[in-house]
Amino acid sequence: MVDRDGENQIVVCPGANSHLSLDGVEFGPEETVLCQLEVGLPVVLEAARKTPGYFVLNAAPAMDLPAELLERCDLVIVNESEYALIPALAAAKLVAVTYGKDGSAMFEHGRKVAEAPSASVTVANTVGAGDAFCAALVLSLRQGLDYTHALAVANAVGADAVGHPSSQPDLAQLGYYMKRTAAAADGAG
Image (tube, rainbow, N blue to C red; front, side):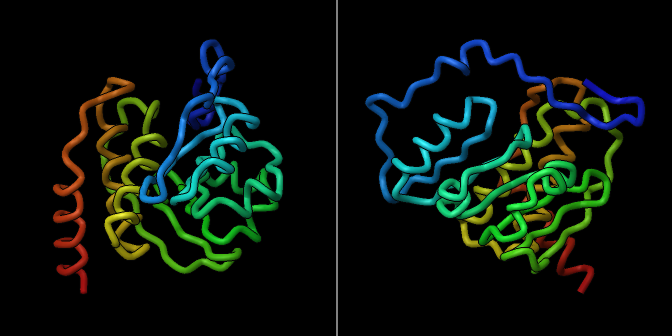
């Protein structure tokens, strides 16, 4: 949904997500697991406990999070509204916050350590932009990009998503965005 100011609103109709089970699912130490809260907090907490590797939480929709979950997260990703609604994130080890047209930032234990501007695009549909951003950020970080470059790549992927009328558009390969954002950074410096 979209509010009167044009801001995207999350509406959750759990359906099949409310029946998700991790029975028989195992994660290896080299695997990265990215969860969000539409599947239910008990399942997310179980996934965090079962993940020996890199664990990421997109804390959407916003809700109070158990300390155990926050301590286990290698990265939490939220938008600015969610960041304001979850005060415990100020103490989290690493949090990426999106600000829509104002870009994104990375915080370590509540201290801003990196930021990147948004990519300019004509908005057609904001549904799925957060998911695109999250996937791109996690992949960029796991490939060794520094925070600023990883945020820039994720911003570009999110912008690509909102520029398409579909809620699930095909996105360019991540390598394309890595090269494009690196070239833009080199040109700015």
